[in-house]
Length: 471
Image 1 (cartoon, rainbow, N blue to C red):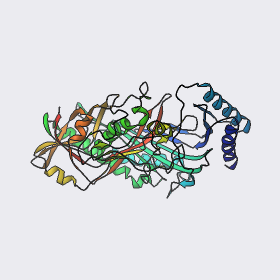
Image 2 (cartoon, one colour; image 1 turned 90 degrees about the vertical axis):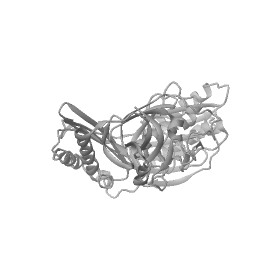
Image 3 (tube, rainbow, N blue to C red; image 1 turned 30 degrees about the vertical axis):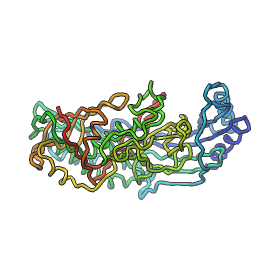
Image 4 (cartoon, rainbow, N blue to C red; image 1 turned 90 degrees about the horizontal axis):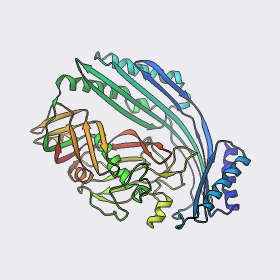
């Protein structure tokens, strides 16, 4: 490891000698394990390792990036030469600048009660066969049971020409499942995704077996008792999974500063929020949507981002108004502000860009029962089956998976295929009560070209929306 760190330090020093006004280098080693279990049978298995160094420089107003997985001084010298050449050759009319940041020297590690490296792949597969067995023993007709486990151990060393030196270690686990439950000629399908920063204790802490069997039970009940969902204007109570996807898609993405500036238009899309949108009203006063990399054990946890900036909680929507954008050092300079630690890369061989981490609706003090008691007629949409949103993150649709009729403040029978379709401001403006039952699920944040699909958490508590149109 010391040799790899020496190469990173060498890259920064050599880039400065070559005329870079600013230089940074990032070593990253990833050790992924992944398998898929289909109906109890191992369908795919991957165990790998990857490491390398990425170098980014500012020179003559241009930005250059290059990477290698050949860990020699000669090769590092070559990629620095390439990065400096690209930057100097850019000949930009408007020079790229970075917002000023303090130098950071630190080392951070995510703790593991049971180290991922100490659990064999065979034991991991056996644990998921036990989960699959628990689902089978429910006795329902479940022709398709799909489980996927992804583990990764990520080690990084970052250095820049301003004096930052950061070492980090982040173990991560992601488990997802897809179930199909059949009753007669009808079927229900469900996909859920959970994530954890830490060790193998994740299966216990996330209570995976209980979550999977509870989901299968609710699917069976929906098939046996579910009725057509009501249509028209009414109140809607949404569970944490729904508030989480709304937070990610209709708040997190449109507040990415590069998207606000139009730089993701041909890849991931634009934003309905303009560059002067700070203070714009998008919801009711009870709505706070945050993005926070420092949530303990969330799958997108980090203490410093991939530009060496310390992480903190970002209030994207605060009291129903746009409060701040997700910024890296380049976009922060364009906006005349500071980075808020939102720059991340999927690996050493791609440049870090503006990304979400753990995006969620900030909880308040209502209980689920209190919110439901206040509904005369409506629907409790606990989870979603499908979602869709346009490339400006303005028009959105959410289709319910587990949902129930509410009459006179009481939850009644399951209802099926609840659909709410509305604009982002309409959704958040309808929220009049926010619960205290904060929960997270894992997701991926996809953007850039070439595409970078990066770990993210989506979360929130139960919320109540008044007088929205369901169909």
